[in-house]
Image (cartoon, rainbow, N blue to C red):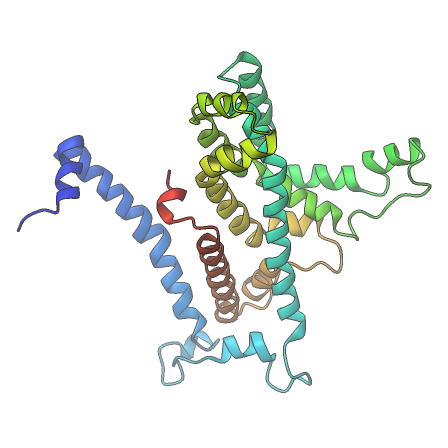
Length: 309
């Protein structure tokens, strides 16, 4: 049987031993670590939560009960829809979108500066300073932010010292700490893809545009942003997916009324010990997040190849 041309070229470039090893590693990564767990969770989501003695018996059949409960609530509930869980789901998705947009706005100027710095020592120092805080565990960083945003924290002390506020602001209850924590948690995943793409931009294009009298806004709109689009798309995809699926940051920084959808998933798995219901919630979040990413990619005319650049 004749090998496909791409596969033949791959083995020609890497050799039969290294090529086979790379394919095995990628196959293990995709099949064992990604596909099989998700297929298992999908299977769980369509099953009843049965006692161990009944698993595999005549009552162990497929059902849509877990998905109906997400939309309509538990059997016998008074409401028409499961408004509490649905509102949590919508709030999670909308907040993740806003966090992604905020990260794009914050990271673009910095990525442009770093990309145009031509690897100067100051730019390298700045990159190191950005990376060092991420040596600290995510949970510890979240608790540090909780201390800063607390009623007697550094931020409230500074605001009152400067007479900007007369009393402490409850940043935790108002969810400002949650938004800041989510933005901070994944900001480097937005910054570095944008930086890598902008760094490859030929600076002569910008100089030529300046010489021809193009404004700063026009240069970025016509040259820099189209060139940086793959990096922006890659970073935005990661930040949105991770923000929507975050658990530690909402758990630590969320206010009493700001339940995150992943916290519902956690409760079904660990508090209620209903893995089937938790799987249904997790599958809905996963499919919805992927669908939103695909729709936005189509809207902004970005394909999968651009993200992989």
